[in-house]
Image (cartoon, rainbow, N blue to C red):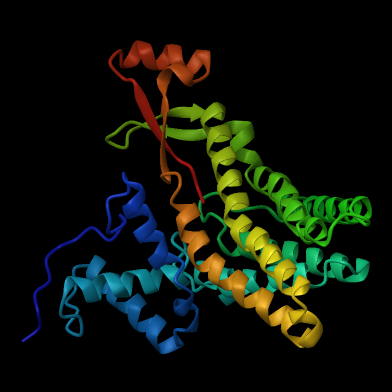
Length: 322
């Protein structure tokens, strides 16, 4: 006889997102790189389970709520939340760690060569463009013009930063030169993220009350959310791009890299992967995706409108994004 499962809301995260610990737990599962290796049959089974459960149909091969949530997280790792279509593998959240560790490791290994700097910065921004396209909103898709503008400007910003700093630190200690890729990545994020969300900066983000009722659009809330996302993305890159140079500089001083020059790239790549495995979910969890803003902090016109309609309203909410 099939197990009768209790009804749970699969449209909300399993763990209460009001605490940092629960947000970190949520993103540790969402960004789990092992999900990138799931087979097509496993993904299709997870999709069938989630869709049948949502439709109220029996799911005889699921015996517990834990199994149901495992299927839900596997489904979320590969299928677009709006369209339900299977996403490109390299654009999935589960592919972020293996892809970024490879790109970051190569950026830091070949930071001295101008052709290598150009190639890996271009490759990194091309990967970011694929991720942005893959995770585009189904309701407000990114236009090709917007995607191309963001891609070109982020790539240009990263290249100008990396090449200019490489020239400036030519005679500086080796450790300083190894930190140049981090500055380039930070500059690219400061360009790329606001450009990809330019519609929010122009038109504002939707504000909600605690019951989910729409209250209006706020540009100020949009700017706060985008700033928080940019900060968390830069912070996400820092452990791998700061601790790895320190490690490699130590190994170089001790003569390890002279004895084993072939180990340079593998060590940097693997150590970056270790850092990113934890930095990615922990930094995603820094700010709640359902962010809040005080009514007093909103634009004057919107604040006046809300005070008139709901005098007791102090805080409103919006989707910060990731």
